[in-house]
Image (tube, rainbow, N blue to C red; front, side):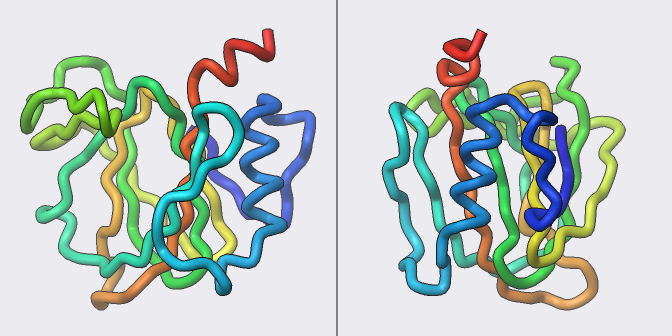
Length: 157
């Protein structure tokens, strides 16, 4: 997992595909975009999400196997939880190959992040994460998620 602010991206610290996603996030006007899914390069794509935060207990932790999440908080604030997926968490259902998502009932050793406008986080397949949790009050957030195909990272080597 990587956590930072979009105003301070050091180019040589990231794989090329992640850097391209961060560049896209930094230079796109998300005020003018409707929520929804947009194609990017290759198998990668963008999701513009307008969400309402809720209690942590109502949001299931998730992992992805085929994509890396590059999440960017355009507006609002949310509390996220993250933990290394050691493979011993109880699943809340089967892996959905079409959506590339597996939900857990809970994850061990969660660490929390407070994510504000301008922050970004990169979640790799080994990073279980729980999104859209409220900090203090319920709030609305606009989050943009670039789904970077794992294949795009492999092509860099």
